[in-house]
Each structure stands twice: as C-alpha cells, then as structure tokens.
Length: 365
Ligand code: PLP
Ligand code: COI
Image (cartoon, rainbow, N blue to C red; front, top):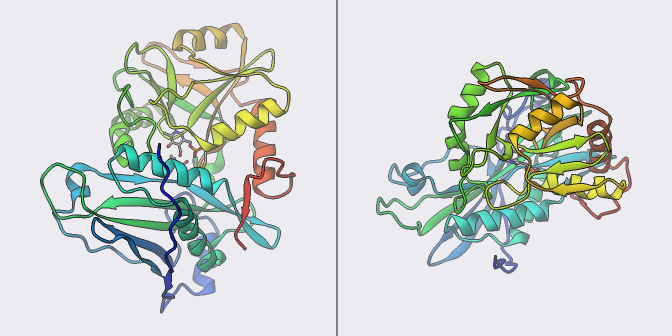
C-alpha cells in the first residue's frame, strides 16, 4: 500500500455553546455501557476531488445533513476505525494510534476512497480527546474513539465518489459484553461466511459488519454473545468473530491464531498479543486451525483456553462454542491463566502501570 504523505491543516475549534453540565456528564459516566453515550464534540474534515483534504473542524456534536443521493446511502462506501483513550496518571494516552491510521489508509485504498494522511488522522483524534477529556471515565472505563469516512457526493452512478467527509466521534465506555462477564459464548455460523478471498475481509468497512448481522442475530437467538466464522472456500478453517480476532492456547503453553490472509481483520490487539506472548517465551503460531481440530482438542483437553480480542472487547475468554451439530466447552469454561496474564499485561501497558517497552503509548495530555 502506498501511504499518503503528511499534510498540514489547521483545525478551527468551535466549542459547544451548551455542553453537558458536570452533573449531567457524571450521571452518564456512572454506567455508560458500550457505544450508547457520546461526548459534546466531534471532528470533521472534508475531501473533494478539486480541493483534497480541507476544512478541518472541531465542533459541537450534531446530526449531519446529507443529500439523499449521497453515495454512502446507496453503495456503502464507508470505512471506520476503533481505538481508545486511557487515563494514565494525571494524563491521557492512546495505544498505537499510528496503526489505526495505517489500517484506515489500507481500508480507504480497498474501497477506492482518498487516503487520509497519518498525521491528520492522529491529530483529529487528539483534538477530540483534548476537548472532551472530561468524558474519560475514571476506573476501568475508557473513551472509545470512532473515526470514519463517508462518501457524500450526490450521484447515483456506480463509481468512486468525488466528495467525502471524515469524522471522529467519541463514546465513554465500560465493558463491551454486558455485565462485564468473564467468559463469552460463540455461535458457529455454518450457513454464512464473513469474507471471501479477494473481498474486503481485511478492511474495516461498514459493509462487512452489515453482512455479518444475520449471523450475529442467529448467535443471539442461540443465546450466544458473538458469532465465529469459518473460511468461505472450504468452510473448515476458523477465521474470526464478528468483531474480534481469536486465539487458541494449548497444554504446552503455546498459542495459535489464524493467519492474516486477506479475509480477516489485522487486529492491533492481535498483533500486540503476539508480541507480548513471544516476549514471555511462548510459541505463537499464525496458522490455520480447523473447526474439527478445535472440537477434538477441546474434548481431549489439549486445548486449555481460547479467547477473543479486540479494542472493544480487550481480551474475553471464550467458554463455549455452540453449533447446530453439537456444542463444546473449552477447559473450565471460564478462561484461564494465559488469557488472564496477557490481559493484565496489555491493560497494564495501556494504563501506564506496566513499562511500555515497545513504545506503544502516545501521550495526548
Ligand atoms: N476483527 C474484527 C472483525 C473487528 O471488528 C475487530 C475490531 O476492531 C478486530 C478483529 C480487532 O481489531 P483491533 O484489535 O484492531 O481492535
Ligand atoms: C472494535 O473493537 O473497535 C470494533 O470495531 C469491534 C466492534 C465489535 C465494536
């Protein structure tokens, strides 16, 4: 992928005239859940074929007015990212935001959208974190940041749009899974696949999630938290969950995670955990793992733990896999020491309580 070079734009800042009062904000922060509460501001940057990136603004969060013919409504030209701001001592930090910026560029390239320079992506996120820093919950909560890019040109012909808007919104969040439960259950989707070779599986485009929702609703009907997808060609190899990557932990302490082959999202949490586990002396294989092997290893006891990981979910042990042709449980059904240890280390680095040996933390305040 060709990266887009840095570009300087000055952000004009318009503070909300009537932001939430400290009391109203505190009430919302008491139990924010996930993705339901939003801060007072947002960032927008416009792009057009003639002007390139322009009009960078920080302003009051408000609904958008778009032409009903805007391309995004018809052909789904939309990409997004997800990252978090953490309270670190008296300051605030981001975790590997340059990785989100780069993945955003690679998503844009795949969807024939303009590439936002890495420095503008990071500056947009930092501007929002700074102006809405009071919205970062105390304790275990974080501020989830959602950068996204929409094709807004009013045109019904099918070709890449000539006009876009980039935005960042922010949402204070607690645990992704309700009640912050320890282990989650997953539904094995046999009928639906998430991504095929040559498709958009490795990009964070809204369309991938739209296509996964019928399988997610099947999962919910079966009483599961998430859906797990198999590959689209042989319907045999475990790929990832609807919104998280997956790891398997074996009795010899080694780990396996499905390889990045273009059909799964290259998770930043996944990449960080591979580094942390290897640093601990563990063997980590990026290797295909079949559903039959998964079932057999769970039964024999060779598979000790299994976990989902991602920015929203952090690390969530997978306790049970439910499927139309029989369910199975992993180990104790409640996680285990390897996922616990990796979570402690990762969260410790993000929170500044464990040394950041890899240079992953970027201080904002
Ligand atoms: N896989 C999918 C489909 C996702 O939506 C996410 C979340 O962003 C991930 C994996 C994990 O990626 P990351 O660790 O970068 O958040
Ligand atoms: C994230 O982890 O940032 C995601 O986008 C996944 C989604 C389930 C919220």
